[in-house]
Amino acid sequence: MSPHTRPLRFGVEMKGPLEGRTWADSAREVEALGYDTLFVPDHFHSGLGPFTAMATALAATSSLCVAPLVMACDFRHPAVAAKEFASLDLMFPGRVEVGLGAGYNPLDYSRSGIRMDPPGRRVTRLMEYVRVLRLLFTGEVVSFDGAEYQMEEIEGTPLPATPGGPRILVAGGGPRLLGFAGAEADIVGVNPSTAAGRESADTFRDALPASIDAKVELVRSSAGERWESLELNAWLSMAVLTDTPHDAVEGMASFAGVSTDEVLASPIVLVGSETEMVERLHERRERWGYTYTCVPGPMLRELAGVVARGC
Image (cartoon, rainbow, N blue to C red):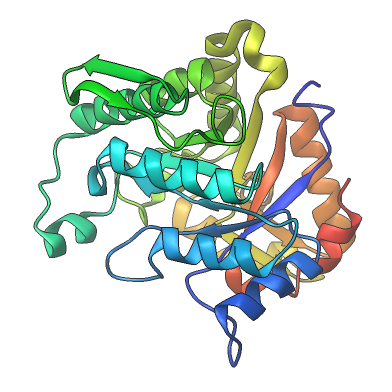
């Protein structure tokens, strides 16, 4: 199925339970509202422990998928992560996705004492990480001799229920990482580059349509024949349900030095009425192939109508 014809699906990123609810109850509400996936972040300074949060959500629900969005490779050796993900997939077949990133937040590194290597090395580490996981998900005894990881005769155990292991989502904004994701990931998070800092105007401008055109073309060309099977993920940095969308994004447009039309067209922004939001999502599927949208946790209930109407 082409990325441009795949049905829309939605996930929600949550750092903790809904107010006055347990985490298990919150996961059940996410499922009841029609979301496909509960995403959990991976930071030392906020949020739950991702594997515990994912396991609890899986046990509390019957069809909900879970995934980290995204797990920083620097924080866990791939042999450790492979065992945890394989165990979850074995216990809850087909309901686990593996979201991976190269690590971007300096606070995670400075506060934990983990060395934050230059971006190029972190990307190399992520690329090897994916390859190690793929090998270990076969259940065979494998060896690996890379620049970042060396393993000798390690068995991938337990064997995941999903043949080849859970689907892998790689998110990034730079050309090297997006090229790799197109060639080897199952789901590609096509995001702005954070080289200038997560909150900078340059970062937001890198999420405008012209930049996304180039990023998606890079993913498509890197994927080759795999393009038809790829799923593209959009992480929303701004979601507002309103009848005055241009007013809602005026501050962002001024900050970035662009028009409100450009802001509203960015795939990391979803602002407008329910009808306008659904139309935007369909337009993005047609133009770029985005079909998998991550909603901010605080908008879980407000966007339930959009989730119900998305198709």
